[in-house]
Image: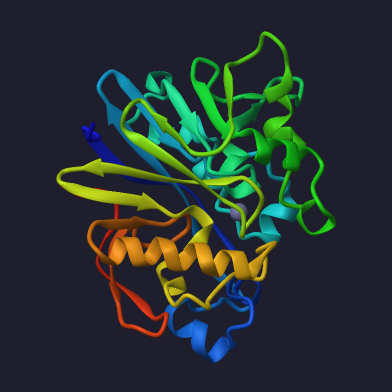
Amino acid sequence: MPIDQLQSLVLSRFGLDGGAMFGIVPKPIWERSNPADLRNRIRMSGRALLLDIGDRRVLVETGMGDKWGAKEADIFAVDTSFGSAPARLRALGIDPDTITDVIVTHLHFDHAGGLTVLDGNGAARPAFPKATHWVQGRNLAYAEAPGLREVGSYRRENFAWMREPGGVRVELLDGPQRLFDAIDLIPTNGHTRGMQLLRFNHAGDTFLHAADIVPTYGHTPVAYVMGYDMEPMTSIEEKRTVLTEVAQGGFLSTGHDPDHGFARITDRGHDKFESYDKVEGGVA
Ligand SMILES: [Zn+2]
């Protein structure tokens, strides 16, 4: 079943170290597509997708959220004016109470930070209490006991509520899944364990949301893999598969491109892919 309405939304703006974002790629190469500020940070967005499917309204990803102290906001160049995920949706003219389902590709803070908001006592509570939340069980288990390299990326305040009995509804998925007869969820493991990509149809095209497999459109050459990735050679295999598929037709959707939500992809051979026909928020 095709998606009725599709939008790419910028829920957050922030910056991450360009060297970490491009792994082994030398700065003179990556700074052409992704220029760095004086502290070597490149511009990043926390992108979400809004998918209307019949009577369901699905939010994919939740951005950075607003639980940031002054020191962290400074380090990550967080634009704190964007606020919590529900506040940002309201600012974009979207009533957060209409969201029936929330899918997160993985629980790193720049995707799951908006899952919670602080209550009056400073406790993190679900930001979308009426919605059903969909995440791979493997990713949640790993987020609860991360390896040393990912301790800073998996913050309990974003997902501890998921194990509370009788609380907000969470569906822990185990592997590939089709949701609402419209969205295929595709697990990957190179960036982190149990991430899930999305494939769906809209307006006659296939869309593939690559999350952190292709974080910005500067990352389309296959070897441009992030230093953050847990298994870079696995990322390379997964990325080649994703880009080869999109180059046959349809659109790619990235997790963090500062300027564009969707793009078409062309295959230049020798593991060089390029984006074109980039659009910011909506396609048809
Ligand atoms: Zn990530």
